[in-house]
Image (cartoon, rainbow, N blue to C red):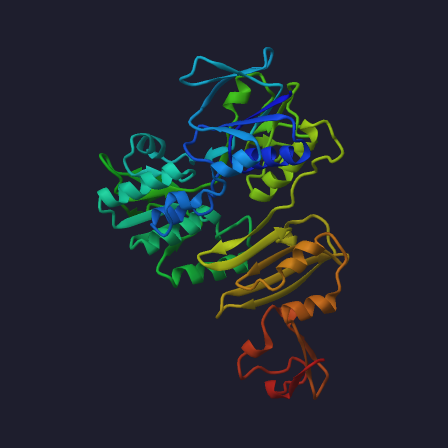
Length: 449
């Protein structure tokens, strides 16, 4: 019986195992992880810190799930060395070598720490600098806040996890500041206008946001006292949480002479440079790109399962960036191209509606009448339409109706006010708005049916 060994029980590793079992009842599947917990959701880790969730509530698949699928899970097993010639893996603290016929590396990633003076040292010495990637990290942060009676926190990084972390820390009654290197929040998911709208909403909840800011140094000797920015500004804090992106975990593969760059290099079937060794998830690099998003892990897990059992019918072509989740309690979807101004070619068309009062922003990006991307913040009625119609021709009238974008016509001169072009709802125009065509009042406009 063929034995498939998987290192890592994250999204990539766990769903690769599930998809392999779906395709084949006979192969032997074993998952080894250095963690102490079966597969759990990392998205909710900040809620463990704020005590809104207990850590065991994050577990998605319990022991019965593995038993029902005849998948063996080995916790607290950190892989030490791969021997591709003899097809065995050695684990720390164990003298036994685990054999495999095929090996999947789902090594995940580690939080990236920018070149900030004292950051790595104070993290290593547990002086008040933390990153959040695991349940153990969350429990350690929670314990530090409690045992040191922390009152002020700084989150370095205004990405998805950084903002949710800041939200939970703020709810935990800590004075919280987010420091972001880029000029806007969520630079990968939102355009400038939407990013500023989100910033205003977050600040209305009592969280301070500092943009376009480079952190130069973590201050403090025995413990963190704050940070110093490159421009000289100093912010006080008793804890600093760094959420500044991820770094693929590659050392295990690299030491086994598997080809690596920023990530573990794979081909269109998720095969590495070494026969019978595959890689999936945050740790991989394909066509000079790494992803680090759940949709990519899910897509790759299906392709790797087919490759493992010898059915190479589907090739990996990369994953369209897409996220649907809540940011500080606000529904957000970001998919595909979100800022056509950065694209080289022309012919782009944008349908947009922005309601700053309710923190709602809807932006649809088209090219040659095909849906190429979207941002939906605070309003999710169009989510299923957007997901189903990506890269397909769309009916603009249907889109307008879905987004509630209307055209208003001046009854005097026939001048049209198109909400999709201005991005501002007609009802939000000031009372003294004048028709650009004839100078008539706002009252002489009517909605075009």
